[in-house]
Length: 307
Ligand SMILES: [Zn+2]
Image (cartoon, rainbow, N blue to C red; front, top):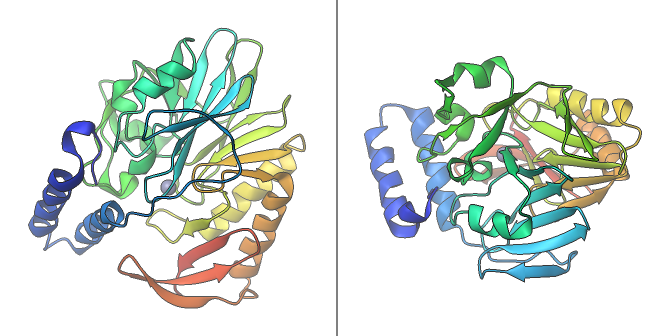
């Protein structure tokens, strides 16, 4: 899995293969490396059809949500990542920096000239791919992210990034769960939403009714099966978003069909409850080398660890 322009495609894959060979005695790491290799090879170029595009550089597409919110799509990447720019009067937030297949810094700079702070929805490799190229990087303040940061440098543990070639980056700011970040005329609340991963966060703006939720929810295949995922916490976090933020009207996710209405959060809450209480009908499938249970619902599918 390449994480920078300098290490992409064939050289990145062969490097990952070498790591796979080296880690034969460590099955968990080998499995993760295999996941990355498979991810890099599984090309699935596609384009979300629910947005109009402002600009493209041939790899990234930029779309305007409204005058102060933008999406940066990676339609040719197999997971169809979507990152978001929230523009305030004094600064901007970039929520996720992509897979790292191409550096996102150049296109992000075209979206706004406001001082930009990158922050990841969570530490999986495909959300922090260009973090190292940003001068201002905020990090969710959790014991686990503090433990992986030394002298302000975050070195992603493989168990958190799931990508053996993921680069570290400098942390310039720590945001605690519950913090409200004022970006100039806009107040953005930081919400810890473990479930997809233990370090997942959402950004919520009560005034607009917008919530950016990373991999917690989008119109596609939601992964509750990866190392660090937890169905009970996934449900608890979904309830927290619904109960603590009645203002939320629109949810923006980090892959595939990113924009969904509040009702999808309710549907996610129902779906997770049904899985946990064994009321949902799942089928066992092989997914990137793992046996998982696949639960199809109306607007999304959930993969969970096979019972
Ligand atoms: Zn993820």
